[in-house]
Image 1 (cartoon, rainbow over the protein chains, first blue to last red):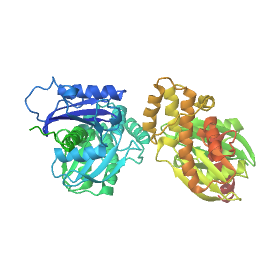
Image 2 (spheres, rainbow over the protein chains, first blue to last red):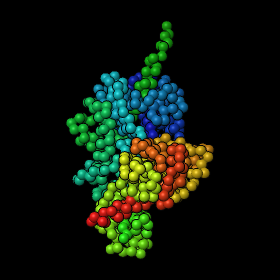
Image 3 (cartoon, each protein chain N blue to C red):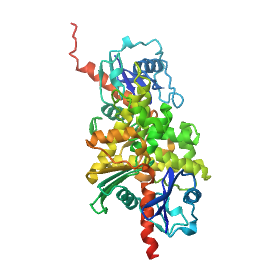
Image 4 (cartoon, each protein chain N blue to C red):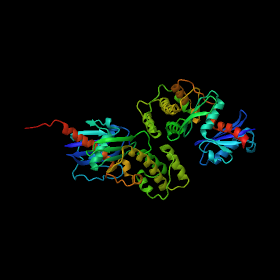
Length: 283
Length: 261
């Protein structure tokens, strides 16, 4: 049985294919202007085992060929994410909150708190022992604390997005930012750069600033171990280190592929749909 | 004897030289890296306009975010008090002052004698302040000064649903590329309307009473003023130069402190 989960986010899209409850293959691409095209491109990336963002596929996959798979071969397809309603070939769609909870639970069994830091939103989710969502809070109104914030900052400092985390760890001086708003923080960062403050120090300060917001969100749902960070920002070691500092003592787990949690959850929901169908018995 | 008020905002520096009830000179300059040099420059320009020297000033009072970087100011005063004074001086019937600046929005409720009864300020979010309009002007390639007039040509206002300036920018990009194309005037009207909706929310916290005065650089935008009037259901008073209200208020304070110092 083949099931597919597809997560069309605001900045990136992932497609995951499961075979009988096991991960068969996945892909990760940048979201294009047309969601339907993005959906097809994500499927193409999955069958060819391609991750266009942040390097190669990091998770172990069965050693079988997958590039012959087509959408029609799928027994069930579930879409999620902000573009979930425009996936033309999906059989059903499920909200990203449910999918992230479920996906994180599959990636890290025993998870209790999930922080999903995506391109344009940030969610703190509590899940039960079965991966079901019991509580959540989301910030999708303000860019501070989202990937968009990091993109704008990386651009302003002229450092590639995937390098800012590492670079921030070289910081030797504490810088604190007074503004919260991305627009104002950017001006503050540019002013500091003109004053000759080093990029690692500025970046560390910025990572600290967005972490404060995220931690506030987390505290509203309550943090309990296991604590997992999913979403693209999970790949930024600088942010993860700052969250660790601010939470003090709570162990953070980052899945090998933090970005595919939503799509994994969707693929699992897709499997449910088949199981729920009345079984056709042939005697 | 003349006095001067100086208002150092995040984007512009304003100086007003006042003698009695008469404004002798008013100057607005862009604020740069250091507040001090702009303060001096704006002051010199205003003094030239008034044909006076710094020594002729009975007193100088500074206000605004950069008020501490004016070494020649005798006193510093908060922007809320100065805006209230300036607006009340221009319009004694004013009971609400809405100041929409580059980086902040301030709502003030005044009593009949011009004292501040309540105030609220947003300086944390760029979505309802001038920098947002600046970004939109650059993106849509329409000069900042023409946004207002252009928006009045709108046949209907496009809905902008994002609250955040960063997200609104992406939203506007997607609207610009929509097929069939949306007239730019309709997009601008939508931008102004969404900004006014947020301003109105904050202004409502202090209670809006007639008459309403709007000040600050954003108030030069006729689209914003019209949208605010539509929302309020009544006309808004806008000074000839809405940007200098804070500096004028500071000058009015200077008339008083000069006597005691």
